Structure formats: structure tokens, C-alpha cells
Length: 282
Image (cartoon, rainbow, N blue to C red):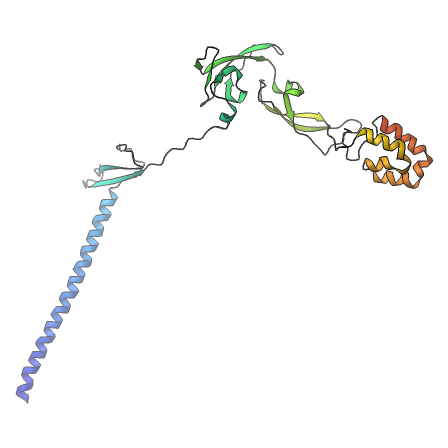
């Protein structure tokens, strides 16, 4: 039995040695692979450092595609490696100016609205007199002269005056519904006025101006006067104008025994008594 056990132990020892050798070989092969992967990654990192930023002034070849590439030798670091720079080109967007929609194409330059041109100030012009101004059309505007030739520089004739000095019919202003039109002294309000497109003038085309309160709430003077004459003793005229307190007073006093009724007929007839909201009669 001892003679048979000795060869068995020797064979088992050899088998363990072979297994240990195979396991060590597997471990060493795994380390070598990881080292090779790390070295490869380092080489990729070094090569990517050679890629230049888009702000570099290296020339590149223009192509029809949206992506452009260029090769550059990394001579600054002395490694001699070639980096690849990728430039992404986005198509340029051209915005249309807001004034283009107001400017008709291929029309007379002198007939264009003021928003379509820029004119030099004529410091020698006399107020209220016609003067000649040198003008130039704005970009993306096309116009012609009297000879049907397309031009950029031309002259126009207009009255020498500022925009705020124009006639009220030449501009439009904002209205106020909070001021009293029937008051003494007559009230004013701050309005913002804009010159019409076909009017030429000097200075800002949008300007502030103090205007008298001039708005209506839909009340008719003729209706108020008719109610005051016929049903004034019952306060119908005051109720119509929105003055319900005075209307109740006239109703329960029978028009102040007729005296109040006669006074209201006179006051409404001359326009002294108006709507309660402070607006004007129609």
C-alpha cells in the first residue's frame, strides 16, 4: 500500500504544479493586456492633445458640407504628431429689417416713406420754407429716379419744420379716458403722438404733447336737452347723463317745484352740464 501511495502523491504533486503554472500564466496574461490597454489609451490621449481648438488661425479648405477638417502638425510641443481639427459650420441666417415691409421696391426714391431713408440735416433751411435735403436709402431697399435708373443717393424737398410743429392732421395721438372734458380751467393730458408715414419732418417722429381732454362716452346733447324739456321734472335728464344723485333729488322734489327744471334746461342748452364721466357730447 505504501508503494502504491508514493507514485500517487507524486502524480498529484505534478498536477498541482501544472495548475499553479497555468494560473500564474493566466494572471500574467491579464496584466499584460491591461498594460497594453493603458498604453494604448495614453497614446490616444497624447494624440488628442494635438487637436487644436477652433479659435486657432490654421487655414482650412472650404467645402460644401457643414463639417470641415484640417490637419495640423503639433510642432509647438516637439512631438511631431498630427492632430485633426473638426470645424462645424452653421448656415448664416439673414434677418430682414423691420422697415422693408413699409418700403415698396422699384418705386421712386422721392416717394418712399421716411423710414426707408436717412437724410442729412440742412442747417441752412428757413423755418416754414421748402428746403432740399440729401438722402440715402437704407440697406435692402431698391428705388429708381426720374430716369428709371436705380440709385442710392437722391434729394427730396420738404418743409423745414420739426415733427412736433406739424399740423394736427399730420399725426395721430393717444387718447385719455380719465381726464374731465367739462371743467374750468379745461384739463390737459400727456399724449404720445406719431407722425403719419407719408409726412416728412425733422427730429423724432414719435414725440410727447400736452393736449386738451377731448373724448366722448356716447352721450348726445340733443337727447339730454329733449329729456330736460319734457321729463326734466322727474330727473330724466340727470339720469341719462349718469348723475343719479341729482336725478333722485329732482324726482322727489318734482323738479324743485319747476325751478330746478328750468335751470337745468338752460345749463344743458349751453353745455355747462355734461356727462358724469367727464366726456364730451356727440
